[in-house]
Length: 272
Length: 272
Image (tube, rainbow over all chains, first blue to last red; front, side):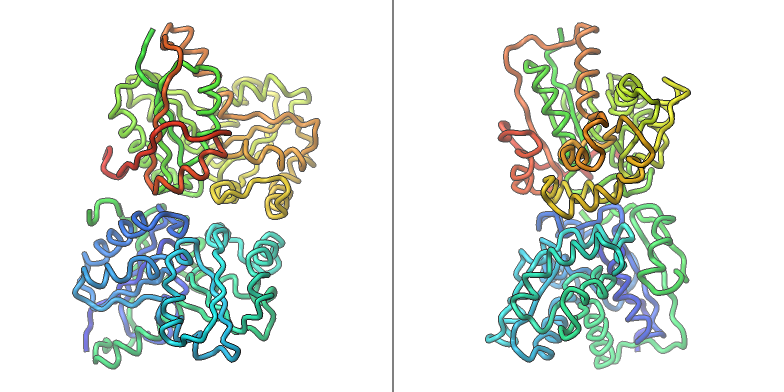
């Protein structure tokens, strides 16, 4: 048993889709969420910048006494998880490995589609994990740089013609390649699931990387006897931009109200 | 005569459209450009964050001995110019006042359209300037939050269906309001001029806020006898994200190659 909180972070709002799953499957845990809303998006930046920002995010989260960190950001998981794991003496859970495993388990024809930010796709991290699990799998990857700005601006509804056109633009090549499974390699993308499903068709399975990561973190903590023992945990939210703008959109990501305090962090003061 | 360089900054690439004009009309000036590519976009963030970032940008530029600063960013000009001017003992030129003046001079029917980032529109700065110059003018404002992500991702061509659909979505209400002049209140937007013109029609005059700002800065420096006297000035570029990604896109904004060194800055180390 370990009553300490779990830290969760993302470049912005996306990680809230993973937080939502964590809260459902581990209701007794205390959670501390950091969204770097003052510097989002990460996925269009260079790897050095992503690594520097991720280290600061972790330095802030570690100002609390945590038992584990969930990297609820596809871009950070794909580009910086190895460094963060080496530099910190507590368990880190990223989204790449569990999503790769889920994709390999679900595919029937071995053709797996992968979408993510430009930096996630450029890293090759998903391909490496999928290749290690199933050397015969073929991965068709497409960077989707406008998906995060769309979602962060509240545009994700499947009726939105802009959302539909951008989704068609990015996804048509994957549909034509005949993938039967599509990894949503960014935690913002579950909000676009309906629009993505419209383009890909109902027979293509969508793998929610944030949800599979939350599942894996829960299983791993349970196996190690590190779950908290309390009826109902709490949740605290921290952001690096205005707290007002956060609350408005966050409720959509969480599928309900923001039921904990939201505080602002001067993130550039943390780490190096 | 003043041989010192002029500092120019923007949240990212947009200010290069103003730099391009400055270089054409003041070829003898040394210019130092800073693009905060590690934290772009500014226009979707809260005012406190914009002000903090702008102060750091200026603190970096002032590590050089400058004679003036051109705030080639609509969001910073609309939200932070007053503070920057008070806090610094050198001339600052923003994009709002010259663009407002140009719009008032050009309109025939008194109906002026205004597009900009969410933060620029929210500030009300353009409306105040236009109202002060012509109390009878009617301003129709529309925030265009996806324009900067589109441009920064290299999507601005008038043949791009996504660009066209987003432009139609944002601009149709302004066209229907009957504006005869449209202020491009963000220095990224001149790259979208063709797409914007397609929606608005050829009879609507587009006011390029970065170009009018460059004009005004040149005129003001000339009046004060502060222009440099040399045949050909130099240009140095600084960015807060990867220098490679910058050079690729910057040549499009500049309408030619990046003909000066590009260096990376740890922007969070400047200012407070």
